[in-house]
Amino acid sequence: MSGTELGLRAFENAALFAIACSLKATLLLGVAWLIVSVSRGHSASFRHAIWAAAILGSLALPVLTLLMPTWHSKTLRNAAAVWKIGQTATMNGEAGKIPVTVVNALTSAPAAGKWAELVLLVWGIGVCVFAARFVAGLIGLARLASGAHELHDGHVRQIAEDIRHREGMRRDLRLLQSEEAKTMPVTWGILRPAVLLPASAAEWPTERKWIVLSHEVAHVARMDWLFQMSAEVVRAVYWFHPFAWLAAARLRRESEQACDDFVLGSGIEAAKYAKTLLDLARTLENPSRNWSAALAFARSTNLERRFKAMLNPSIDRRDLSQRTRFLVAAVAFLLSTPLAAVRLPAQDAGNKFGGMISDPSGMPVANATVIMNNHKPNGIQMTASDAEGKYSFAGLRAGEYELRVTKPGFAEFRATVSSPDSGADFLRNDITLQVGSVNEEVNVYSDGGPESAVNGGVKGGVKDGINKEVGGGVGGGVGKGVASNGVAKTIRVRVGGEVQAPKIIEKVQPVYPEKAKAAGIEGTVMLHAIIGMEGNPLSLRVMNKQIDPDLARAAVEAVSKWRYQSTLLNGEPIEVDTTIRVNFTLKP
Image (cartoon, rainbow, N blue to C red):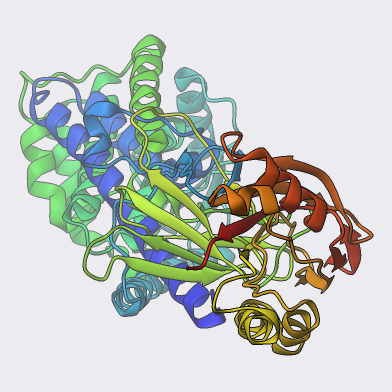
């Protein structure tokens, strides 16, 4: 696979991974929306916890996808499951045999790559724009904090401490005072939370101080800023997704109402709280976009809704118990984990169907051509093994394939490859190539036939030269005066270097037995032998036992005297199998 193809594959895999994560986030946020929709009678704290769990789960999905082992579901397989690569196994290809192995192929069709580049480009631009907006808010917040100083008013600090202890908050709370008298109270931070108050805070009535600080401390105790920033990250990543915008807006809305419920639960009358909120919204400046990363006490966009909730005596204002929080987190985890483990098309981006091609000695075979064909239009993909014998395919459509591996000097490897029905994880398929066969055939004619002596030898030598080398074939034919058509060999070689096929350097032609000739007996003797490392036939064996014994004896006697040039694999002599056909034919 070329560098360009690998680059396209990388773009496709990245785009598919992003699409798969957005589909899973859709399911997670959709479930949260359904739960919240049917839980309108529950408290704002409960609804906030549902949205927070869904948002954190959406952020965790990509990481969990990479960490979790694959979970395959037969129910979801046709819609979403992607099967990984076939089982790690060595497949020996032989003539006449088609071994079956398994490949887990992507359910998406091979793409040209352009769509992936476009998807990633548009997505990336959107992410950069919204990420820049998010970072600008954090920078503005940092500038706002740097321009403030510690609030030293003892009365305000004492009220804040009383509220903090009543809430059971162990973290220290920083009270900052702005230089501006009209700055809206805001809060931010996780490990070192801070509450920013305007310069006029020291002059506020005690009741207003209690109301504002109770609201802001509630934000800190509930860790609302962490959840809201997580929602902003989700919105930046999935900027195109309506659910991401809905989740961020609903999370902020529920957090404000939950803090309002906390204030009302502390004994503040709803009418007084609403009046204080309205007065502050009129006299103080709303947060600017540069530091909107903070949680402001009063935003004009949601005041009317908050007023209605405050003045509604039938609303559930209870905070969540630790048990309920644990149950919400557990349900979110139980939903996110299997969802992340399900292999959607994008989530096997790094997985490929492939392995290593080697010769029988275990050495890698470079530049072997690998072909995958699903017998459909445009269903052929090709690649080649690298210097280490490795090959790979990605983006294959699920289905049945014919796998073929070819390399000069080796027998063609063929295998049937299909998608599995089970969910077992397999990663690679190694292939062992066998030495290619060289067919040789010797024709032995009777002496009385029309083709004999030198004429027959020349004809046989030319035929032998076609199958082997012309010079050696003609020489052998003329020298022996017997027509020859060559010798067939079936050799198994390991591919790591080059294969040098065996050649006959000394051939003794079989002689037609007189007894068989007189009896009019014809036939073909099939011999199996091993060509030794020194080039001499070993372990000669007659394969067709029904042949006439005289013909078999004549063939064995002649072939046993043949000598071959040694077969070399990676420069080293090896033993190879060979099959020799000796045809005995009577001429009229």
